[in-house]
Length: 155
Image (spheres, rainbow, N blue to C red):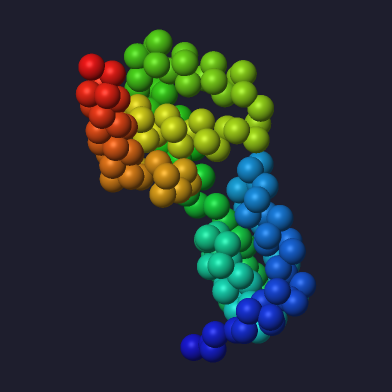
C-alpha cells in the first residue's frame, strides 16, 4: 500500500496539469497514459485523480501495465440516456435528440445527465450535489415558503 503524497508533490507532478485539463474538458471522456509510467507515477496519478473526482483504471501486468483516467459517470449517463431515448415516446426522445443537435458539444454531458435524472428518474452523478434529489427537494420547499411569505406580505 502506498503512502499519501503531499499536496506539493502532487502539484509538482508532471501529471497534474494534464489531469486538471482533462477533468475540466467536457469533450474528453478518457485520458490514457503510456506504458512508460512507473508504479510511483501511477500512484501519483491515482491520488491526483481522486483529488479531481476522476476515475482511473489500471490495465495490463508487469512492464506492460498502464493507467487510464476516466469519467465513468459521464460514460454511464450517456449510455443510459441513449437506452432511455430508444424506449421513450417519440416526443420525449425527439426533445432529447433535438437538445443534442441544438446545443454545442461541450454541453452534451449535461444534456445526457439531465435526461437521465429528470426523464429516467435515475441519479445523475456528473451533475454534482446541486442536482441531488435531496437538495432539489430542500430548494423547492424553501421556494414554497418564500412564496407563502410574499403572499402574506402582499395581503
